[in-house]
Image (tube, rainbow, N blue to C red; front, top):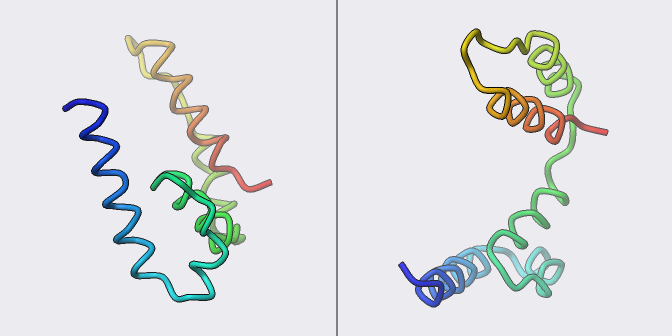
Length: 88
């Protein structure tokens, strides 16, 4: 697919998501121009770190081990994914 095709699909997805939001929520995310930006804004508004989530992420981090024969890049990607999701 070309970039223009992806841009069109992104605009369509953005429109569908916006249509499904209530007015009060849609008002808070009206400035978002991409689907990824809209989803990030909604996540920051509604996803609150819970104690269970924090414990689960800590457990994943403490049990993270590099598999024998695995690439270092893959291991670091897993580590970064866990630490990015870790609530502050």
